Image (cartoon, rainbow, N blue to C red):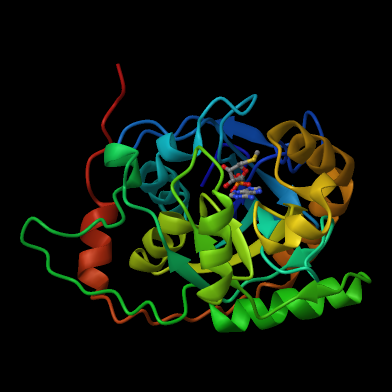
Amino acid sequence: MAGTGIEPRIGVIGGSGLQRLLPEGQGEELDVATPFGPTSGPITVGELGGTGVAFLARHGRGHSVAPHEIPAKANVWALASLGVRAIVSSTAVGGLREELAPGSLVVPDQLIDMTRARGGDERRDTYFGAGVVEHLTFADPCTPSLVAAARAALARIGEVAVSPATTVVIDGPRFSTRAESRWYRSLGGDIVNMTQYPESALAAELGLGYVNLSFVTDTDAGVASAVDDEDAVDASRVFERLAAAQPRIVAAIAAIVAAVPDDLRLSSGIAREHVDAVLAMAPRVSA
Ligand SMILES: CSC[C@H]1O[C@H](OP(=O)(O)O)[C@H](O)[C@@H]1O
Ligand SMILES: Nc1ncnc2[nH]cnc12
């Protein structure tokens, strides 16, 4: 429990363009030490619509942490150590299909991991090993009940989210070539992003629910952008579109947070004692 007395039930990881969830001055900022080094930045614990939340900006303050440098193990561990039961994440994505125009909202249910851990240790995608042998059941990288709840919550606020959908996750920080983009689409990808993995797998390893809200900022570099090159990916345009959509994204995240059931029950098949052993690891205090 944080000093405010608020017990965060939901962790929110804000992606590109989502630096703050609670109004300025609300909530308590915590620096949570972890066995995996520092998190991307401070975690703000407060209340959102009556629900205790712990908010972390994935790329840190001022977007200073590149996608391949994101300390996903530290970030997910820190939220779990604060007691959250589920993570609601936001991401900016490229659309791989014409119908996924910039401005579309997507609630993916599947992903294809195309990362090759080129970021080094930050990209490591498991807490287990060193004698603790676990094989994560990861057929549903996004918790199905939360995907359904998110879709319904968005509909209630008048948003039509594209769902189900498959995210192709790449290392970044560069965007894809036209050939890669066409290939991802031919694999069945609907959207492309750099951060939904390993975050989602690490959450599942710690027994947390995971649901993602994706905001389409561009049509990547493939077939769709050939239709309208104005929409081909370009980082400055991505940030402009995210800034303009910030109130809409915050409202959508708030609706999803409110829809996470109190009695969220998960079974990822991982032995509880193994989860507890990871959570009991001593925090490493950074220099
Ligand atoms: C700003 S363009 C590329 C950047 O945006 C996405 O970030 P996030 O997933 O945290 O919203 C993408 O994954 C890249 O990191
Ligand atoms: N086209 C794209 N590829 C990867 N990550 C993205 N984030 C936003 N747009 C993206």
